[in-house]
Image 1 (cartoon, helix red, strand yellow):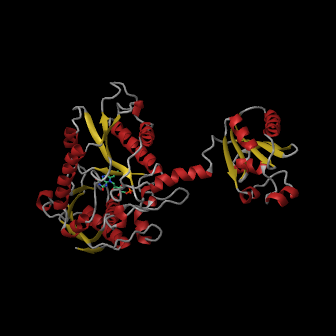
Image 2 (image 1 turned 90 degrees about the vertical axis):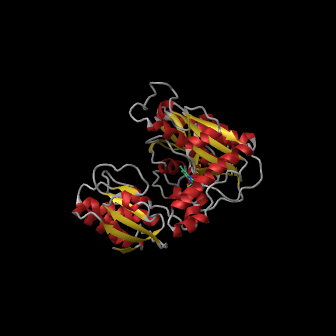
Image 3 (image 1 turned 90 degrees about the horizontal axis):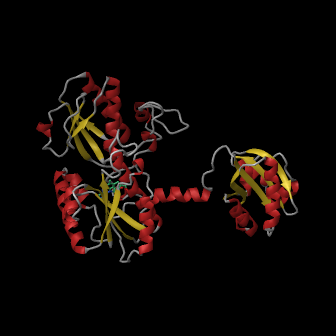
Length: 460
Ligand SMILES: Cc1cc2nc3c(=O)[nH]c(=O)nc-3n(C[C@H](O)[C@H](O)[C@H](O)COP(=O)(O)O)c2cc1C
């Protein structure tokens, strides 16, 4: 049984008094494991409380008096209310966790306690929980503003330790971390990225190219340290638990390790920039990796002047963040909405276009060729050929596979495509229906609905 102990105490209450009070209340509760001790905010620094928490091997949470005051305690006290602003501390602290009260308020000369049964193992205290969410929200991909400051070995080891704690399929731990500091090696890697940068720039329509020219896409030579994170797809041998049905899980595991590295680095004040402007085997050759070791991620790491509050691609208007409500489906694909909110279809959401609206400010043009032969159009950099049928086209960045099963689904896919392109800075669609079909008409209708919701103009 998971237990919570609520404690109210006068300042300076000795540990022994707390220990004896809590021990007798726990005896009344009939046993169990104390997971949590909760008291009013401000009392967490009391030495008696700290020692009690340590001796119980529990977590300590605190709650502000106002929050405790809202709990309907069975044994309220006017005197306590007058002194602390809440009619009860110990019982209220237990109730606040969602626990069921097993032992109501018990008193000693200077303290009170109550015991509750927790419905589940407790999460972190609010302040600690907020730190976790904060580091996730404030992690940034950093390419600029690195400072000349070496990374101490112990800091780097902590970051790598966090990466190495990542979950992995069958505990196969398929990653390795190649630390690259040598300038000559980094120059060679930089040359590879520059060549890919040029190739990507050449593939862009002129206005998009202009925006791209202003973006920095790597910090290979600006940082003291590059880390190549690799994958050994065979690590663990033949019977790795969970890999047999989906071998991709090996690469997912490495990607999760990189995310752990990124978050831990952020917490240490280290900027990380992921560079993927590479043909991975070319980097593997520069680093002289064995043939069975693949590159998954290449990150540039160093101390920075500041962490921006928003992604650089958002700040420069290149792309926008996708609203969470677009990404959450309840029970069935297409029933979108946040937890606790009735789901809606993408078409209704776009027609209402209020709570989740994203407005594009760009004038970038995309020519949407519905049903055309890719070979005829792909030399135009602004063309995107939409393939509506069940057979998957051979992979090409200029061909989008949207296998609509019904006209209703085609409308939805059209809305979604319009919204996705608006997020990538598209401001104008030229829709060309090469294919004459009900599905083609339907996706075009969806594209227009989605475009109008995002402020994208349409022609065709
Ligand atoms: C797999 C992966 C590859 C990336 N490759 C690059 C890259 O080559 N160059 C670059 O500037 N940013 C790269 N990024 C960073 C993204 O642009 C960045 O994560 C995104 O814009 C969101 O910004 P944020 O990470 O600051 O939140 C990459 C990110 C990931 C996850």
